[in-house]
Amino acid sequence: MREEMRHGKHMPETPQEQIRLAIYDMDRTVTKRPTYTPFLLHAAARRNPLRLLTLPVVGLWILAYAAKLIDRTRLKEMMQWMLLGAAIHPQRLATVVDSFADKTARNNVRPGAAEDLKRNKAEGYRLILATASYRLYVEAIAERLGFDDVIATNSLIGLDKRIIARIDGENCYGPGKMRMVEAWLKREGIARENAHIRFYSDHISDAPLLGWADEGFAVNAHASLRHLARNMKWAVVDW
Image (cartoon, rainbow, N blue to C red; front, side, top):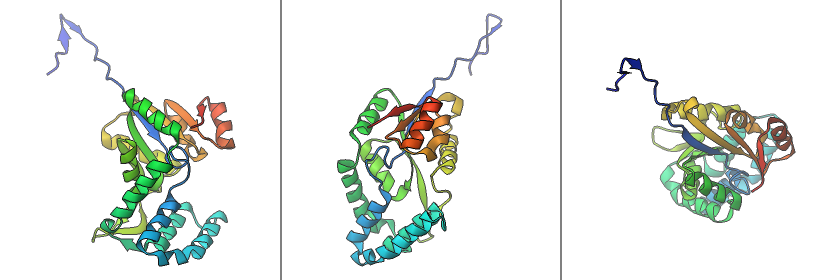
């Protein structure tokens, strides 16, 4: 038990060393191009090419989203249903997940992102990938890039262990991503005041996390995020 009193005087608590976290968005931040639709096409082409015949219908769903007739969550679920099926066992996806992760790590990572990951790792930061993309393939990419943890959109898993074309909980996007990061901190037993956090994103939807972090980085940002970043004094970098 720690001694509370020495020589009749109360000794102050030793300050807890801050935990260093570097949290990265994935699509167009770490990667050059988005990954969700390419993953679905990659998986469909290798597992059941006939599913590619549904692409015109997928296009209609994308138009419905653009017209604000459906939300992003529903669009993602329907694209998965069309191109992967209503439910699939993860063992049947293992080969295509690995080949897609290899392809992504080889051809779709920004050189500046790879350098920044190495720098943060060398400085003692725990590397976290926080993305709206699905955990079912993101974990394999994260492993290849040296991330320590993943916060991502989760798939509903049936009693038969199959992955269902439905999102479990929230889509890890915008305010939802903020809530999922905070929930992850709680599960890990990390108090916000005991962490120094760097956050990286290319998209304005991540403004809540950029403002919440100790250091916000607008990476490869579009015009609206660049404007906001300058007003908020966040770093603007291009990888």
